[in-house]
Structure formats: structure tokens, C-alpha cells
Amino acid sequence: MTRNLLRALAALVVLAAAGLIGWRVLGPAEVLEPATGAYPVAAVLPPGATGKVTQAPLIVDDRIRVYAGPRVIKADGPVGERMAITPLWSYRRWPAEVSGVVAVGSTVVSRWTDGTLIALDGRTGTVAWRASVPAGEPFTDRTGATAVWAPPGLYVAGPAVLVGDSGKVLAFSAADGSPRWTITLPRGCVTPFVTVGGQFVCGVGAWDVTSGAAVRSWPVGPSTPVGCDLARSGCAGLRDAAGQGWLTGGPRPVRTPALDAREATAGGGLVLTASGGAVTASGAASWRWAGEAQVLGVRANKVVLLTPDRHIVVLDARTGSRIAAFPMYVKRERVEPWQPHLWQLTDSYVAVERLQDDDYYLPDPSVIAAI
Image (cartoon, rainbow, N blue to C red; front, top):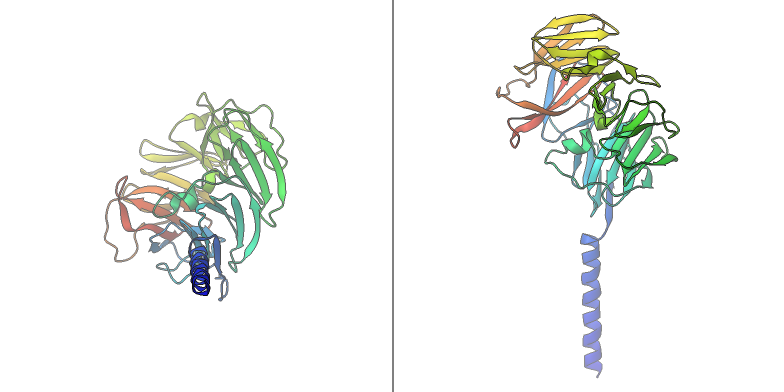
């Protein structure tokens, strides 16, 4: 009897130990490794490619690079480092996956598949706040480019972060996570985006991002956004359901026929059209730059172009005069043809993910350059 009891107790101890080990390995967990060094200084570098990395970098505050993996967010810096280096900080969760990441100033906000919105202080890597939201989509691609440059259902509007899913949009203050407003979207609300003028737009209407109130007399959708920043936010214009172009830099859209052309985009008060072997500007300024190129965007009075031979050309947005031109390859890198997939443009840098075809990445696909 005693022997059987001892055997039963021993079996319970083993089972409990196995359960504890299983919980520690497989159970929900968070691992935070905060920064131990100083926040990098925003350096002013001469124009040119500065480095290349394996993962797509979200450039934050022009000081750090933030990367997303299936279950981790980490940062290194400064931005001009030649390659990825030891992380300044990292944040891991299990078993949830990263769905998307955006930044407002130095605050890094991540959405997870378990319905958690978590803000990290980009200067220290510590958790600033968290909130409950609808569950995000799973992590999808190898480099994390979608998560950091085109996060599904995650938007930025000035000092706020918007989460759109399940027929609703929720707005949170990026500073402290406090809820701002919630709206229920009507049926048919497809391909949402946020304008630089401060409207959340979908297929059947628009709403003010400050109050959540509906905006009247909006162009008939569904609309195609143009000249957007990351996360389909800060869009400078749109083309409505009839293909008519509108600039969206103010409280009401402004009809702009020059934006009707599919080759046209917008930014910085300009309509930029790349066709016929030239890039032309109208609107806030009028000029013409001779040469074939793709317009990557407009930031800090600089128009950034990518040429067919994979050079970056930087033009003065006010005059069209050339400020800089350089190959989008790092020094001593083998020159191979590639196509741009996704990219980010800041006041001081441009980062581009390079693909040789739809399925093949270069060994270090993301190249970063100072502009």
C-alpha cells in the first residue's frame, strides 16, 4: 500500500514537472531586452548608399532601424550603419505573431495576432502602453517588409494610431494609448487609407481622424490612393471611382485634373507625372526633369526618383534642379538588375527592398541611402 502510494506521488511529481517545463517552453511569454546604450544621434551624411540589411528596416526618428520577425521586434542603429549590428533592444512574444508595426515620433507601435496593441519607447525599448484590439493578420513574408512598410489594418494619423478591422476603426493616442474614438464602418468599406489632410477613407466615405465624424461631400469611391507614406497613411491624393484625381492635403479634397493620369502621383503640394522620358511637376511649382524614372516620393522639399539603371536622383521640389545622384548599390557590391518591391522615404534616408523577380530576393535585399 505504502509502496503504491509512493509510486503515485512520484508520478504526480514527474507530471507536474513536465507540465511546468511545457508551460515555460510553450506557454504565453514575453521577453524584453531593453537598451543599455545611448539613443543614437541623428547624423547628417553625404548622399549615397550607406548599407544593406537582410530584413526590411522601419526607419524611426531618423535614428534607429526597427525590424520585425514572426515573433520579435528589434532595433539597431544608427541608420547609417553599413550592416545589421547587435540590437539596441528587442521584444519577443509567444505564441502570438507580429501583424504590423508603425512609428509615431520615437514611439514604435506593434499589432499582434492575439489582439494586442503594444507601444514600445524606441529610445529605450521598454513597453510604454498596451491596448486590446481585433486580432491582426499573421506575419507573412521573409523580410518583414509587409509588417513594417505596409502593415494590414494599421494606420498613422498625426499623433494617433488607427486600427481597422472587423467593420470598425479604433483610434488611440500614440503618446499614452488612450482611446480617442471608435466608428462602425458601413458595408462596402474597402481598401482604406489615411490622407495627409486628416481623413480616414474607404470605399463608401471618409471620416475625420481627429473626431471620427463623417466628412460630407467626399468623392464617390472606391478610391485609389496616391502619394502615400507607410501604412497607407499620409496619402497626398486619390483617384475616385471615375478615375478623377483629387489632392487631399486639406479638410476637403481639391479636384486636380493633372492627377487623372495613371502615371501621376502627388506629394508636397505637387502633382508629379513620369512619362514620355521626363518627370514633370505642377501645382505648388512647375518644372520638368529630362529622364526616365519612377517617383518614390517627396520629403523635406526633395523629390526622390529611381532610374531604370537603379540610381537614386534627388531633385529640389521647388525648382526641379538636381541635388544628388548615386547608384543604389553599396561599395564593392556586385551590380545585379533588380526591381523595387516596397520602400520607405524619410527626411534624410531612403530604404528600398530589392527583388530580382517575384520570388527571388537579393542576399541582402534592403539597401539604405542618405539623401
